[in-house]
Image (tube, protein in one colour):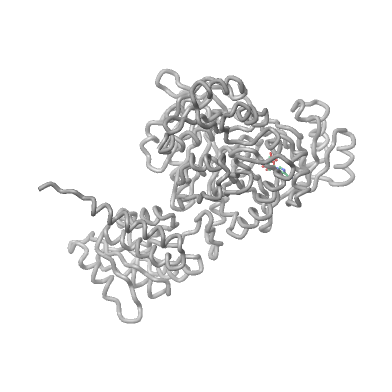
Length: 602
Ligand code: AMP
């Protein structure tokens, strides 16, 4: 295979995640990043060119023979980087200046949405401050959203809760011109309430390929208090987006938006990001962005299993319809660690401690947003400094792991939110009947129950196999003898919660599988754990010897049994999932090939 050179433009956590993911692609020989940061330089060669230096970037790409350029932030796209690159015959992932206007002009974006009949808050455009205030005072009232038309580094949206605040917002934008030219016009928009979610899709202009869902945390303090920031954390998937809602968003927002852009002679290629407000299951568009969200890209790319380069290539070649995305079914949580004072003034150059400890943690990535090197030490160089991102089987496991990693890191004055992921937790906790999210695999299909925490190591072998096949599972401790009530209620409620198969691992007098089976009609697979004086023979017999009428499928003792339990669970699920059946066939074929190719000397 001809390996390619790729350039990523930008210097934040989003670009770190993109570079990290691309660096693992077999299709790529070398990743470059302009300008990048010290964290990014672990995966890419950083080039000291500013993102606004379009001519410099064109020259570099030509000189170095870069095969493709990927643009992280919106500013260079809005400035026409993609147009300049195309003019020079250079491949670039990201929309043209005309298409990027979907983010660069709120007026354009609102007109497009209205024309295409896509749900969004009602609005009116103003250039005259008195007329704008009159409209607020006499027609819409407060609360109300007042938005500068153009790009304002994420600060151009002012939410006014009183008429005085509305008057001040209008004054700031149209008279005081705090956002400069971006505030030549403003829109007064209906105030929407509900829960926000980020919905991103990659598109080649025809096919719209949705990414996993996510949710950002814009306010600087816990419980969404304080001023807006670039984003203080994110998680993926976002359970607020049920499977039905996902289809609704694709059908009624994302596909029509891409179609409307083509109709407006602004064909869209790149990532289209919909910032949505969801109320009573109905999504409305708050804004569109023309690139990956940051920090959302960090948890999303941590979960992406498909080669990112393959996606970019397909988007450029207009064959995204050939791509099927594969996701890690686990949840990813990203906690942003920021400099003291951010989003206001802050100092830089503070030495960051503890990164080496986190580097040893499994399922944790620290994406750098604003770091530099001082000798061999990392120091802070921006407002948002790090995106500490962790994977977990459940949202709470991901939150715990992310904060465990955050706890290892420190620098003078740092701050971070302590409630990242709590909204997702609210959706999942006690959510009997929570809608299954087939697109993101967010809901467990297999319950792995163990009699004691000491069985965890063995039972994790089952979890790993399920994860490998993209099937979400949950791990629980429940004892047949020591917590019989919990065991019975877990089994009793499992079916209603969308679980299809139960796996039970226990040692000694292992009645766990039997107790579960007695309380459900779901198939139960027992794994005897060999932690007793009898090395598991006791557990094997107590798992297998069920009275007629209450079946338990019993596997081998220990890890081999746990692995087979997962495979049997997959085979059961595959009866109604052709894709999974295909993957199981491939797995068997690979297994056979491995053995056939074994060579032993004489
Ligand atoms: P935007 O840059 O348009 O996403 O706006 C930034 C943030 O302001 C959003 O994430 C929302 O939290 C909030 N916001 C924007 N528009 C509205 C609206 N019409 N009603 C209520 N909140 C809004």
